[in-house]
Amino acid sequence: MISQEKIQKTDFLTPTLATDTLGFLMPTFNPLFTALIIGGVVAVVLGTVAYLILAERKVAAWVQDRLGPNRVGPWGLLQPIVDGGKMFLKEDVIPAHVDKVFFLLAPMVAFGTAMLAIAVVPVGGTVPAPPPTLTAKVEGSTPLAQYEAAQQAYSEQFSFAIAPGLDIGILYTFAVGSLAVYGVILAGWSANNKYALLGSLRSSAQIISYEIPLGMSILGVVLLAGSLNPETIINQQINGTWNVFLMPLAFLLFLVSVFAECNRLPFDLPESEQELVGGYHTEYSSLKLGMLLLAEYAHMITTSFLMSCLFFGGWHLPGVTSAADTSIVGVVLKLVVLAAKMFAFIGLFLLVRWTIPRFRFDQLMSLAWKVMIPLALLNLVGALLILQFALPLWSMTVANVGLFVGAGFWGVVTGGNVTAPKRKVTKLPPGLPAGVV
Amino acid sequence: MPIAEKDVVWLQEPKLGLLGQLYLPAIADGLRTTVGHMFKPTLTEQYPEQEPKLPGNYRGVHRLNRDHEGRTKCVACYMCATACPAHCIDIVAAPAPATWKDREKYPETFVIDELRCIYCGMCEEACPVDAIELTTLYDLTGLSREQMIFDKEKLLSVFDVTTKAGTDPVRTRAGALGPASEPPPGA
Image (cartoon, rainbow over all chains, first blue to last red; front, side, top):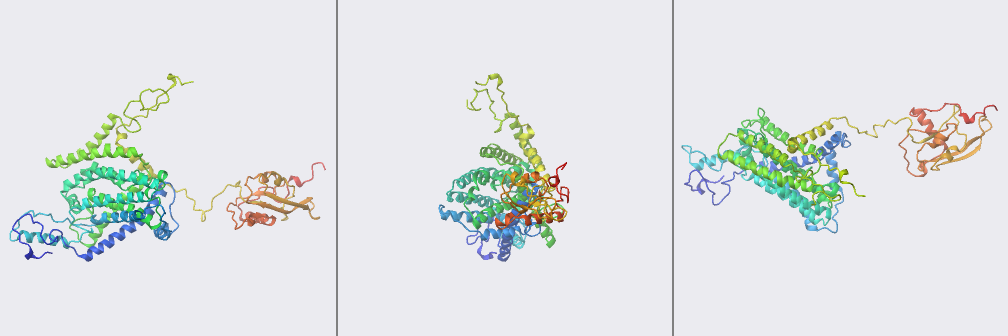
């Protein structure tokens, strides 16, 4: 922490930035702990990704009444190791026609951004950071001492996040997460291959479109918590109710956008293998392909953690975990609860893949621009009004459900979707397709 | 001739109702089907450990049947070779040994090219003495083309193996030769 002499402050409730250090605003943490948690999180994410691929194949097999991989180890549990070994040992082909710099850069960008995005995501029990301003004067203590005490207390708590207390947490995750599209675009462009380019173009259009509802849907959550810090958002849900009950529509929009962001079916147009061979990773082989695939799965894990933290109360489960419980059992329970929520979302990802067929590109765009963005906007306006006029919080649920059902009614009344056009089909001369005249 | 206006029927997809427009019920329905399949018994047959159950009339590798004395039943009549659409049967006939009272000829060599064979079973149908039969052996492998040309001894050993294993019981009258080996009625 910063020494007492360096700061001369008279202002009371708002400590300003000290001139010589950032340590004043950001709590310092034990570097050893941070290194440990980085190592732990990266190891767990990579291990989970390896087993996610096995899980994907297993679930695919079960859904199709098959057994799935079961040759390597009991129930095929050693399959990820063999798969990883295969990725390492295969010949790494760099085709002659590719743009080498970007071709090599793309997997690194994809992998790097996927790994960076998880830095602020809480992976276990967390403590909310103290607010940036002092809320009350305490007799017998200077505001500075009071502030420092709060920061000191916070930095002594152990939070299961690589960079805890980051006030731009959610913003950072979204910013870095959407950088992942650069990996896809670079891969598709540098491959000098039509299929790869088509895949990356689709991907860029798709991700740009779905970023908007993705970002707008959580603004309500952010407004409610008054912070972009995931730990604070979790804390707000622990003191109140889980956001999914207050804002089911926001959660739905977020979920759908996340499916699109992760390029999962039904939004997997960038790599639709029936149309585009492999999409943007057509020309990749060996470990570079492995890195691209790994980045996708890591993205799934990050977003699943985010959904658990933003809408499902993070590590909170009434009656099982409590903020006051700092014993080993309590810490492990929090980890388990959050991991269970994360894996539930992953399971949903895997199941939806075999449930909903892929969208056509125009359907994809209609869904984003004509349905999800207006709904997200209305939802945001609703949340703003409710918070501004201090209406009871249950009215948020009502507003959300009302918006959702209202949108359904609107759809029924206007009667338009892509397959049943809104325009009345008139009798045309034979041979002319509908909609020409 | 153009289609008359009255014959043209304009079809339009039915419009989605409220539940359809909300999509979620349909998605839930789909997820129920997906999850339901996860708990159904699997159809996978784990082949090397788990042998398939083949019907008795499966047409696999040929065998030459033996009679009750252990001799080949074949009387070298060339009916099978004639019937064979793939021309994979090669027989060289020879006069039967003097001790074999019941026939004039026997096959000196009897060779089937298992690679040419199309496993149609015509030989089996053509044989007047039920000497050639297709078994349920399906995992026929070899390291060279020569290995896949089965001679008389090999075909007889297939008989020994399959009858011993009990997978392919002799389907015809065991022991006695077929009607072709019997003297014509009235002779």
